[in-house]
Image 1 (cartoon, helix red, strand yellow):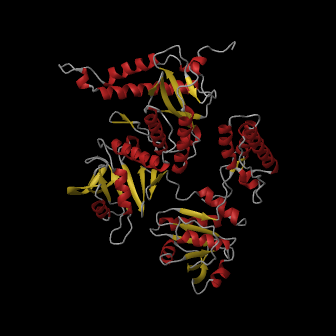
Image 2: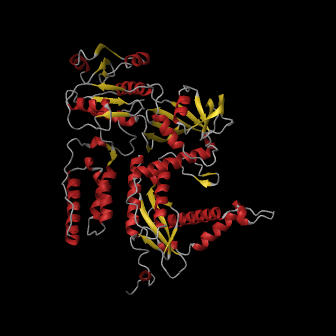
Image 3: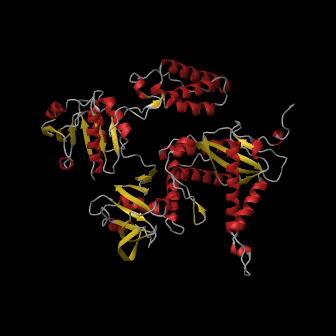
Length: 598
C-alpha cells in the first residue's frame, strides 16, 4: 500500500498468541493490585526489539499508538554501552592471576547485562510514551523468535505516588522494591518472563492472584530484611504468618519484633539470648513473643531472635536499616518503618495497611446519618472511637438517635446508665464486658453491655464475625437510622451503614465522556470494557442525563458486537440512585467533608 512503511509487512507479529499473554499480564496485575488495596489500572504491553535483523520493525502489543516506536529503535548500542560502564564501575579488574570469569561469574554478568537492558528500555519507553499519567515498569527480556521481548506494565502515576515508598532501591547490589505494590508488579512481570521463556509462550490465565500476593509479600519483606543487613533472607513472611496464628495458653498473639542486625547503634538490647531462637520454629517464636510488652520488643536479624530490647528514639529513618513487625491479632501482623505501615497480612492474605480509621470518612458518615450533628458531637464520637481502637479487645459502638428509649427497649439485656460523657478510664472499664456501648449522637453514653437484636436478612457476610453480622441485622430492623462502629480485635474498624465516598464532579463527568467516545464506532471491545468498569464504579453519582448516555453507549456497543460476532452481553439499564445528591461531590478546593473532628 502506498505510503506504508515496508518494514511493517515483514513482521506483523512476534508469535501466535502474543495477544493472549499480554491480556493475561494485565488481568492478573489488575486483580492482584486490587486485592492488595490499590487501584493502579495497570496496562500491559509486550515490546519486541529485533534481535539480530535490523530490517525488522520494533513491535508493540497491542498496537494502540501508546508509544512512538521510532524512539525505541537502535537500542542495542545503548544496552552495550551502559553494561560496559557499569561493569567497569562495579566489577573492577583484579591485579592477581585470577581470571575475570572466576572473579565475576557468568550468571552475575548476565544479571548485570539484563539490568542494563531493562533500565535503558524503561527510559526509552518513558520518552516514547504518548501518555503522561502513567509510570512504566519493565520485566526481564526473553528472546522469542526474531525478537527480544520485554513484558511491560504501565500504572497510574498519581495513585502510585500516594503509596508510601522506601527510598533505598538496592541491597547487597540487588534491586529491592520500594513498596508492596511495586513487589506485586515485579512478580507479575517475572511470571510473564517465565512464560516467555517457554518453547511456545502461552498466557498467565492459570496464575492465581493470591499466589502472586504471597510471593510479592515474600519479595518485599525479604528486601526489608536485606536493608536491615541480612544476607540472602528467606522465610520471614512464613514465620510471621505462623507466629501470628499461634496462641499461647489460649491467648491470641500480640507483640512486636524489631528487625535489625545485632549491635545496631539505634537498638538497645537489654536481654541477650545465649542461644538464638529460629523464627522458623513457630512455637518457640510465639513463646518468646509472649515476653514482649510496651517498650520491650523482640530483636530479630531476619532469621533468628537474638534478644529483647527496644529501638532508640535517635534512629534516623533516612538510613532505612531498622524495621518493626507488629503482631496485632490472631492471624494479623504488619510491617512498619518509622511511623509508617508498609504491609499488612490477615490470615495469610497480604495487602496495603488501611488507616485504622479515616477522620474525614468518619466525619462524613456521621454527618450523613445524623444531619443535625454539630462539630463538637462529631469530636465526641471520634474520641470514643479512638478509645475503642486503643483497646486490645474488640468492641462495638452503637450511635442511636433516641438512645435513651432504645436502651430501655433492650432491657434486661443491657445496663442502662445516667446519660453522661465517659472519661477514658470509665470507658475502658465499661467496655470490658460483652456487648455494645449505646450512645446518642451528642456522644453521651446511655447503656453498656447491649445485646443487639434483629432478624436474619440474607445481607450479612459469612467471612466476617458475629459482631459485624449482628450489626447488619440490627440496622435492617429496629436499629434503622442509627450508626454502628465495629472495632475488631486486630484493630480493624468498620462503620455501618456504608456511606459512599465523596468524589469530584469532574471525575464522574470524565468517566462518562470517555465511555461515550469509546462507543462511537469502536471495535476495541477490550478498551470499552476497561472504561465501562471504571464507569460502573461511579454509577451511584450519575444523574439522569449521564445514566441515559451510559445506557446508550453500552447498548450501541452490544449491537455492534452482535452484528460482527453474533454474540452480545445483556445490558441492564441504570437509573439515578435515590440517595444521591450534590453533597457527595467535593467542591473545588475543598479539603474533605464538612465539619471534620479536630
